[in-house]
Image (cartoon, rainbow, N blue to C red; front, side, top):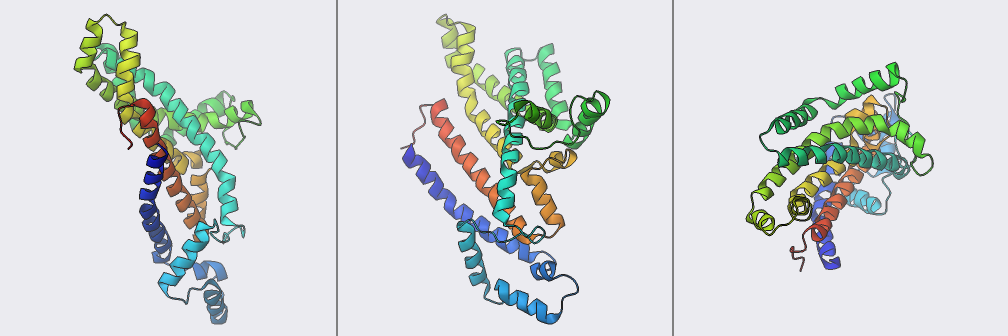
Length: 315
């Protein structure tokens, strides 16, 4: 298993290298210049040339990229243009909030989607299946920003149960406060993703329920609960785990719209603020962090396959 993880990480190195090149080049390809954002509109030509020399922008492009990559590998993405703080410090301040929101939203999605998929797959083409399939379609079709606004109007404005502006409260420090501040954005994202989870798991369950081993298990007298829980559900989890990992990575990478609606201080909101301010070092750092999170979750999903299906050979 350790060898497999090391091989997967080694396979990701070229992806990271190419992605880092694209991230570095993308910022310099957009209209405008990092120098203009640094020195301001009223800078003199001498100030502009001095800033170019200080940043090393007068060197060949490959040397500029190598210098940026070398510092990035050391965890140094430079200073934020807007805040004049290290980019890594700003990102590390937002990652705990993003992790808490992403995991909470995934938990809500699983709590809503898995029972819907099971009930729908075990009674296919019945009234319950039609009703639950309609719920899945509705969850997918409702925009997250609209649902978030409705939840704010109901629970924050009318009922006054929850705050309309969500702050980050660490769950280990204040579980009740974390629940109050995270529940609405997590519910907004969780309802949407529950439709995706329900559809993928239902399709996988229906495919497994038609397999020969299910008929054999039932003919041997196994209880239906054991057939579903120990055999069908476990085999249906492989494609389902993949989509759960991808959606969790997308939440952690930045649920930009939901964070904007609830003014939640996550990584996605930080990225949008950096784009608005043309804060190039912060943009590069945020995108690189999101990329590393995606790759890490993909490797974790591959490792989980071994525990779900021991037949997978990692040799």
